Image (tube, rainbow, N blue to C red; front, side, top):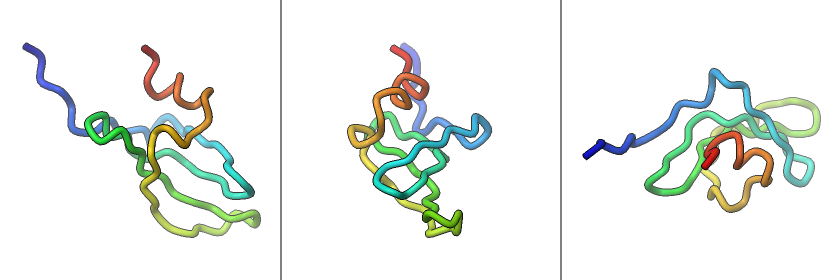
Length: 69
């Protein structure tokens, strides 16, 4: 039986998306928790810090890139 990965590194794929005036860059995906570590940026491009957001709250197009099944 295959061992599940604890996290999937996404920082090298340069996945970016916007939700309500904030831009996010995907860093890491946790399949067991169905959450995503992201770096948040404001409208001016300034870093706001790391955040963990639920997978269900990201745009549908980005979901297909991260989890293509």
